[in-house]
Amino acid sequence: MQERQQGLRSKLSQLGDTPPEEFRKQLHELADWIADFREHLEQLRVAPNDNPGTLRAKLPERAPEEAEPFAKILSDVDRIIVPGMVHWSHPMFLGYFGWTSTAPGILGEILSAPLNVNAMTWRTCPAATELETVVIDWLREWIGLSDEFDGVVYDTASVGIMHALAVAREDAAPATRKLGLTDRDLPRFRIYISDQAHSAAEKAAIALGLGEENVIRVPSDDQFRMDVNSLGHNVAQDRQNGFQPMAVVATVGTTATASVDAIPEIAKICREEKIWLHIDAAYGGGFAIVSEYKWLSNGWELADSVVINPHKTVFVPLDFSVLYVRGLERLRRVFMLVPEVLRGDTIEGEKNYMDYGIQLGRRFRALKAWVIWRSLGRAGVVAGLREQIRLANLLAGWIKKDDRFELSAEPSMGVVCFRFIGADEKKLDQLNSNIVERINASGRAYLTQTKLRGRTVIRIGLGNVLTTEEHLRKGWEIVRNTAADL
Image 1 (cartoon, rainbow, N blue to C red):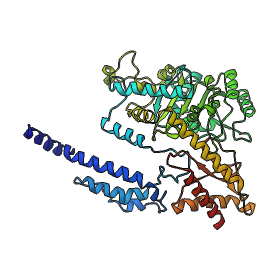
Image 2: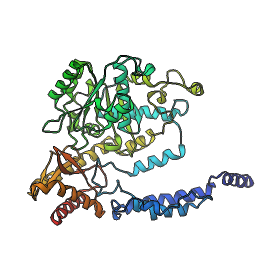
Image 3: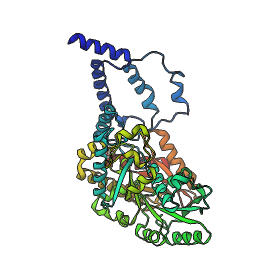
Image 4: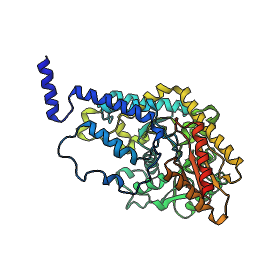
C-alpha cells in the first residue's frame, strides 16, 4: 500500500501536479497568508503611487522554463503584487460602490476552486445547476420580485443588460436571431436611458448591432432622476421621425449619485407604447431587502427584466450578477443552441444554463453566494446595509456643518456626493479634482470624483464591512485637511 502511494506521488510529480503532502503544506501556508493579509490590511497603502510599468519592470520578460517553488511565488506576491494593488477591501477605500470582501466570501471562493466544474448543463454538474436556481430564488424572494420572474447568473450587469436588450430586440424585430438586422427594411431602433445612467446600454447597443447613436440619453431632473416628461417627448418625436422605440433602461442607484428613477411612471409609458422596460438595479436593488427601502422596488412588477449585482450590495465577492426576466423562456428562445457534442449532456425538462446566454463554459458562482448568505442570514445582510445607510447620513451631516463644503446631492443609500466651495468659483472644479488626486496619491484613502451639472464633485461610496465610523471620520478629516492645504 505504501509503495502504491509513493508511486502515485511520483506520477503526480511527473505530470506537473503537486504531491498531496506538499499540497497540504502549501494550503496551510496560504491559509496563514490570507489570515495575515486580512489582519494587517489596514496597515497597507490603499493605492500605489507608481508610474505605469513599475510592476512589469520587476518581473522577468519571459515565463520560467523550469518549475518554481510555491514559497518563492508567495514571496513575490508579497514583494511585487500587493504593493502594486489598489486595495478595494481596505477600510479606507471609499470609492465607486464599495463592494466588500468578507471571511465567508473568501471561504466560498476557496471552496469553488478545487471543484472546478463547468456549470453549462444540468448533467455536467447537477449540483451547480440546482444550487444556482436556489440562490436566484432566495434573492428574488428577498427583494420581493414575483415568481413571474426567473433568473440567470452572469458575471456583471453589463453582460446582463446586453442579454436583456437582445430579447427586447427579438421582440421588436422577430427572427433577428436567424436573419440579423441587415437587408430587412427595418426601422432604426431606439433605447432610452437617463443622462445619469451607466454606459452599459451603449456598449450593449454596439454589440447587438443597434448602434451607439440610437441610445438616447434623456435629461434628468433636479434629483438626478430620468425626467419622465422628457422621456415621453423623446418617444413621441422618434415615432414621428420614423424610429422605433425598443427599450427603456431605468436605473435604481445611478453611477454618480445612486439616484432612483421614477419606475412606476416610466413603466406606464412603456406599457402604453409597448416598449421593453429594463430596470438596472445593479447597485440599488440589494437595498430593497431592507424594509424601510422596500419602496425601491415599486413598479418592478411592470418591468420585463431586472438586473441586480449582489457583488455590490449583497456581500458576494466580484463577480456575481443576476438578470431576472419575466418569462425566462423568452431569453432561452434567443440563445438556445445545442452543439452535437453536447446532445448527450442535455436532458429535456431540466434547466441547462448554457441556453440562457452566450457563455458555454460557466463558473460555479452560486456556491460562494450560498456560503455567504447562509453565513450571514437575511438579518445579517439587512444589518450590513443599514450600517452603510447610517454612515452615509452621518457623513452628510458632517458636510452640512462645515461651511467650506456643500452636498451636491442628497445622500442615497451608501453614496455621498459633495463639493469644496471655500475658494474662488473659477478654481473650484480644479481644486475638487486636486483634493481627490492628492488623497489617492497619499495612499491614506481612496475616493472618486464625478461631474454633476458640469461641476466636479467628490464622491464617497460606502459598502465595505470593514469600514467603521472611525474610518469614515478619519477619511473626512483627511478631506478637510487636504482642502486646507490646497
